[in-house]
Image 1 (cartoon, rainbow, N blue to C red):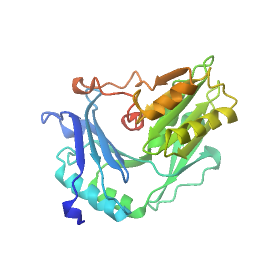
Image 2: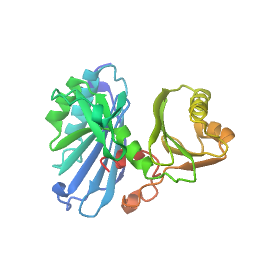
Image 3: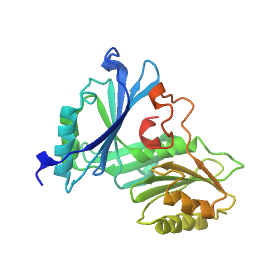
Length: 274
């Protein structure tokens, strides 16, 4: 199948009013082989005003992804705006290191060190040079960050000393588990691949066991691609008495078209850079 024949599925919510100066807008965009999705935030009104998502098909290489990204940007009027700043979230493999021992970040466009100052950690990750070079051609005033940094900072705000919680962010066929101790120190942040809800619950319960958490007393906080109708939620409901969905931070606001948007969905993207 030639690349010209491939159609990307696109959904959007909200409007970017032409009267809004582009230099008062912030773009937060996530890029991987499955999707390109983004939020536009009005800095002036302190609101998330637009959401767009392209579901990608037949991406077999980084070159395929780069070509698709370029065609999408060329045809998407919103993505062509001269944003004041663009945060580009990647979500590949990562490592967490104490910041004091993190090596200096080389200026090679491939290796990135993202400080998580609140926790005294550095999230280290790599990106393909072909992709970062294409990003440099397509976007201005941009920074490349890791989507999981948002989970560390966002979930750390939700700790309650007398109430144990375990946080799980779910994407397509993988999930990240995050837990903190009562003092706010990170206990675990692991990524697992899964095919079925049986795989999912096995790894999640294994984490609880390793952390000496009683899953009948621990609150499970879910974010990402999950809802009460999903099989993953059904599996969780069998083992956890207390389940909730991640709530948006109080300082994040959504415009009227996005009021009913599930705030746990893509939590890691609309909070990017917070």
